[in-house]
Image (tube, rainbow over all chains, first blue to last red; front, top):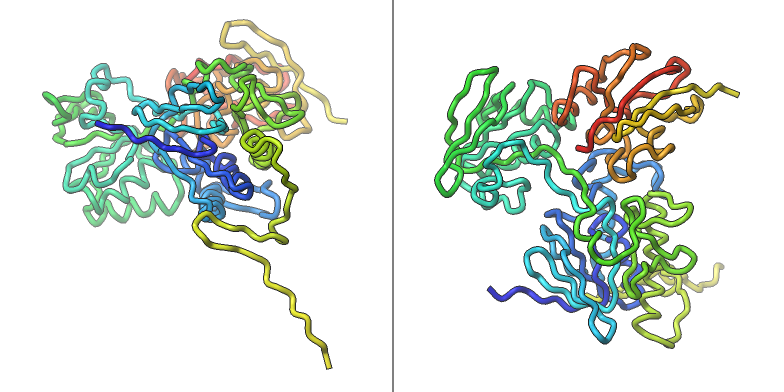
Length: 354
Length: 110
């Protein structure tokens, strides 16, 4: 199959808050961005780990839910029409003779860019897999660690395992898609937002979610695809028919392929020049947000926003050597989107008062 | 000025460290381990201290503190690997004067 090939000014690796905001700052400088992220949705940790938790140190927001901050950032960058390659991991970076780059993902998607911004946070979120010896054989053959496309499960029988928010939320969502949803957890108590727990309770009563607790999935069976699993219910083993097994046991971040790109790494982070532009030891590759390190580094979203802004200025100068530019204020010049929209301050009226 | 307390921490290589912990900075055991860099950055405190991962799992080695876990911690440890009876999440143990002499061991990488 012919793989997609994207062309852009800046490839941003990581769709967390800092990567998203970089799209805005780049857009003000007429630079187009394309974002690659291993997770199926933008937002990084904020969307994956704690969407319903408040953040108290975003300037101007006394309190904002992590999920809402992501929604707002997506709205803020909308007019700059960023491209997205989601559910794929940036695997290799090749620098061409003209100083531009090709970034290739684990699925073979290629991206050609004039600069690269690594905004990878703690690294790629990899699923924590249950310790079942044959589980690797069934990956993408009935075992799914993410719900990338809910349609995959339409009219199927599925078993979700886990006790956190994602297990609860996907059980709720898929109860309207799949033929049968069974939620399995090792104990009776769930760890999630109260409204999610209550919703599952309600759906259980309505017979829309089959809740089995305390229980554990201890075996997977099937010839070429998952056909059934073995459930351990308090020591009693039971064969359970299912089309899909979705273990949602959380994610652990791994620096992953980033470590192989020839970048200077210290303490699991990428060393950058913080005196100037957050560039790495490779000309044209920048690192911003939690993924970088420099003397005095603080892993704060607000610091990442600042880093993204300075980085974009440097990328502008790299792409347009010698071209004049002065910093503009959005209040004064407005925001011109690549989609033809324009945001601007309302003009003051000049009118005499009688 | 409030007193620092002495805590004994065995790192993932089995080496014991005697460290001074401030009691007036609203810190917890996970943050203490990070501040002394006793575990590799990026392998501990991944969720920032919300009891939403298990990267700061510690084994409590003496009876200076109770092994009782709070509900979030208990739920999270149900999903962890290498959990023992004396497992706690470091981020859920605030540093107070009563921790003087505590001995812990940092759990393996998750």
